[in-house]
Image 1 (tube, one colour):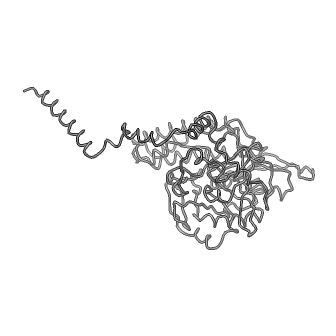
Image 2 (cartoon, rainbow, N blue to C red; image 1 turned 45 degrees about the horizontal axis):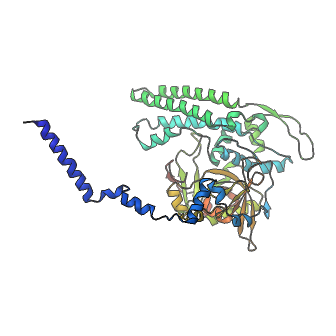
Image 3 (cartoon, one colour; image 1 turned 180 degrees about the vertical axis):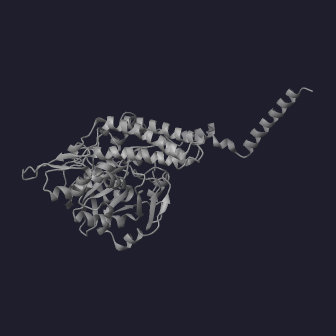
Length: 466
């Protein structure tokens, strides 16, 4: 008997049976058949309007063509109450908006108390320690998950981006508590602090290599103390990269400033901790972190796992509230001349040239004749929207009945972006695209403060909104 021929016949029969079964259950509809393609193609009539639109869009910037001039003409940059501060800052080509924003929140009180012309902390100083601390957090996370398989979701998330230059308010708080702060002059920006991509790429390469080595060492039975020694060896390499790229953080420095009256203050010697003790005027732990995330239940306390830089520091832990509640607290803070950390999905409906954030700034639906109908909850759950950028909330304009009509944001993209470095946000845009807000507890109701005493619901680090 020719067994090869018999086997070939059986395989052919099974193939035919599989195809017939597939057709029986209609799986041919899973592909774009000629009939389906024809139905799709004939759904669009290439009339004069569509042809004119195609000619316009294929030869021009979609966003510029979709600009809604009526929406633009209804807006202005006047505010009933605007917090005074120093010059607009510039994070350049980096993701350090969170750090600039957090420090910009602290600036107005310092400028006012010391009668300064301007004042700026050194973002580079805190960024140096942020990157080192994030590297340690990554390596410690590797060590705490050595028993997980390589294809585990946590391991995938961990190694996908060991460190980055992004962050949130609580990370600034942890850094100042541990390393203090220095004025800009004590540690100036470097090329790599203003252009972080290449440095971050090299640090991540070193960390992935080190994390992989730790996992291999564990599989070979290496003891815990030896794993920790190897971790420190990796951190030494990261520190060297940071030192060469960002400069050396000062352990002591001398500093003086000129006030608004032209009086030059006496030079004084500081350590970063003594400087922070003198110039960080508020207790940083007296601020409350909040969010508006309709994909989760309101009036609950949440904590995002590993959303921190310092390993022993605090995760982003927030009370989720309706937008109207956040506006109420934000209004109180602004009227008391206290700015807030604010983050949002800044790319949605942003007119960067004019400095506006408004829902109808760009009319893509009319341009394409296609409806975009997701609400905020759906956009979050499908990764279409999330917190992408931090700015300082600095002003409010209200209607005749006292309700907010628009809000002022101090950006960190330099004076040449937006309205001299600021963005005007409509109240309707606030509802749809704001995410995080940090407010001093004295402006928050007792009812909401009580939520902070509850045990938080822990969210995974890959949650859609974060």
